[in-house]
Length: 186
Image (spheres, helix red, strand yellow):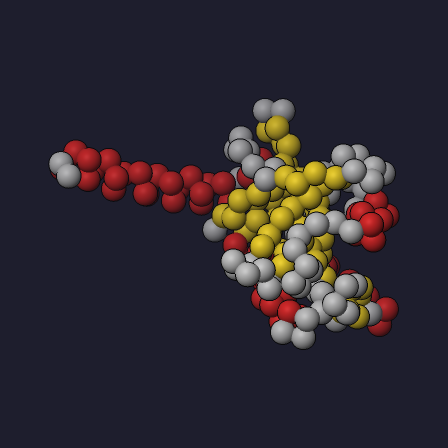
């Protein structure tokens, strides 16, 4: 490897780090290559919650907090946090305990900054793979009606490691959905 190549490699890494740092501070100023960007800390919290439920083979549920962004005609979602409260769950269903809504409300109030909103939800399908069931579609239609709202599904028991997928309905009241792209940022 020549000195010039080494210098180019050394230059690339600081530039990429600065770009990601700049992106994390000013997401609306960047042109998005993906439909959704998860801050690593938010995804790590959600995956830890999903893995804790998977040990009992029950689903888990939480809300995704962040921003709906747009630049140069391209729209994307930035997920900055994961908020949850005690779940009532089985192997094939999950919901918040009615008594946990006060706690959930307090956590949302603390987590949501001046520009943050609930951008969607994440739940697990331990051992079943990632998809939206009819119940999941109804949940998305009834509670997440912003056109950019997302539904993320993880399977922490997937044989090749944790499977992660993100979906969006074709329109807020549509029963049709599609998988959308995502990336994880620092």
